[in-house]
Amino acid sequence: MILMKYKVKLNGKIYEVEVEKGNVELLSEYDAISAPAAAPAAPVAAAAPAAAAPAPVASGNATPSPLPGVVVAVKKNVGDKVKAGELVMLIEAMKMENEITATKDGTLVAVLAPKGTQVQVGTPLFEIA
Image 1 (cartoon, rainbow, N blue to C red):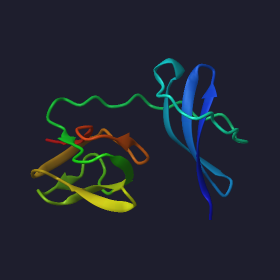
Image 2: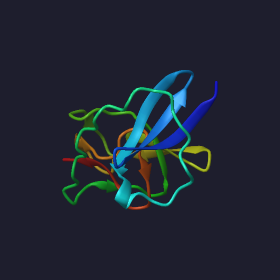
Image 3: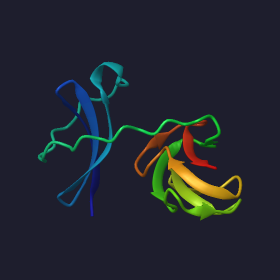
Image 4: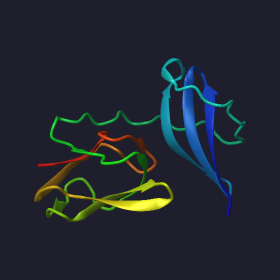
């Protein structure tokens, strides 16, 4: 299967989409004014993406990303009890999946970087209370 990623500009917004065998998944959406410089987007023959939900805001005690990459899986749901060292999500960096674990015992109260999110070092990933 061929997986393709595109950046599409539509009505002043940039949509990053992933297309695989006729299926389209919205990865991110942002205003075209604040968009990073990129190569021209290839056309995508698909329906307009659905409106994205507002992103949760970190309260200051979120677990930061230890490396740049893309969140490829979130293994826990908001409300789940977690123990320190338990797997919460996977970040792909340099073709390797890196396990991101809970830093303390508690309840997962927010996932700040859902699947498909591009993260940098220090990007808030999730919160445990």
